[in-house]
Amino acid sequence: MVAGTLASTDPSSPVTALPNSSAAPGVGPAARSNTLFAYAPADGPFSNPFPNTKRFTLPAAEGERIGLEVVGGGAAKVHARRDERTGCCAYLWGLAGRAGIGGAELVGWCLEVIESGDFTPLRELVGLFVLVIDDRRNNRVRFVSDHMGLRPWFVGRFQGRLVAGSDVWAIQDAGLNAGSVNYDAVASWLRYNFNCTGGSLFTDFAQSDPCSVATWENGALSQAQYATFTGGQAKPPIAQVAAGLHERISSAFDAVAGELSHVSVALSGGFDSRYLAAMAVQRKHLQVEAFNIRDREAEGTAASMVAQELALKLNVIQTDGSLWNIFPEPYHFTADGFPMTKQLSHVAAMQRPGVPCLNGFFGDPIVRGTMERAQGKLEREISGEDPAAVLSRHHHLKPWQGRIDLIDPAIVDRADQRLIAVWRKHLARWQHTGHPFFCANLFVRQRHYFSNNFLQHMDVAEAIVPFTACEVIAFKLAHDSSCFGWETYEAMFDTFFPRIAHVPHNSKMGGARNELLDIHASRCSPAWAAAVLAALRKSDRISIVSRRKSIPRLLGAMMGRYDVEIVATFLYRLLLLDDRLRRSGVAFDWRAI
Image (cartoon, rainbow, N blue to C red; front, side):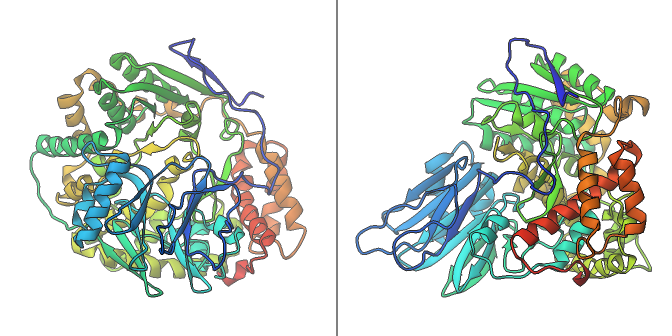
């Protein structure tokens, strides 16, 4: 069985083939290579606790003590700079820009802003980045996150020492975590397939907030926001809204991509990716190549029409009709510690390793307003019920996404009670904007779930996601929800990209053309089912799973039945977490949720 076949509008263009193999059950993916870690050094000579990483730490001046060791994986690109006047050493990890300024020059600008004490100019930065500053003379450390806190960065302490990094399992494996399991986070991942808490799998390591400058000084950590978002209910004409959005998204695009020569784009049949593709084609300094994963007729048809109109080279990767065969290993662990399946954008990024990949994710909630409501209602339209409970139900896994009916109902109920309290805190944080559902969806679900669409391929290619820029979000929040919909995107295409304005969204091409082609079970699902069945023979393994309900369905999955493949997919992810925690010797009890 072939994982995927590829055809190109340019047959001479080489494309990376995906092997038809999967990792052994329970083993999980290989270690990440685009990682960064920073920690207070122990006494004595340098000793790096993180395997397969290199040292980025700038040397100390005479009589100076290094306050922070900085190391990263082989694929990490870090711009490091020392300010001789202040003695601050800064490390910028990621792809970031500001009005055409990048690299070491951008790091110097950031240091000037931080030293001024007024952090607000940092909102001019665009991209997915983390800035680490070791102020050695003042024994102070600072971490700056991007506007949505998308680039993974977790900060905690171990035996009084500051420890931070981009992967909590790597921190655990380095022996720098003493914290226990965060059961709120486990409950969220079980119920929604993502962690809504803002923390991680481990209690001692929380993710940096969006737009934050975190300061470690005198053994204490504090956070300040360099940008705050307010709200509004303006209702200008749609054409004006479309123009305002386009101006800000274009500026964000140029700030990140202005110094690049090549980009790729995962071109689907939707609006977001075609909008970015059209924008990239207009930039004469950019060489643009598109990849379409054709698992539905409508996806391929719409992408081909767009590529033809833009004179854009399109490589088509045809799936074999299964959900997972196109991936060498469908599962990976997210930076906050949980197993999650890969998305098709990973396949597109894999074709051109090292070339930044344009990602249209976050476009729909910004332009079409798809995240304004929970279960069809704005928060102000809900009466007689806790909005947090409505929002929690809105994010529950659907039967085709996960078989929560196979889990002990008492555990599910306890998980829901934990999570409603978490959503109350999120809604309270964003109540002042007048768009609490949108903000909670954007800064929680989009940040921790949809971000998987591009964070999953960080080791292969950096992502460009201009919809997440600070000024774009601020513009969105200043307007009434009625200003955003299909017509907003259509106005943007009519005005700025008329050549592709006539190409319909793939979802408007009819239900039959949007069905998966030649659907059948994946090659990995029988192995997943077998691994789970073996574990269920022991009473202490994934103890919250109903043996009576699960075993017959797992037997069906072992036989290659597509109708129960979701059972193998869902339960295997529980087994992956169970195995990973056991191998690390971390105390864990599913029934403690």
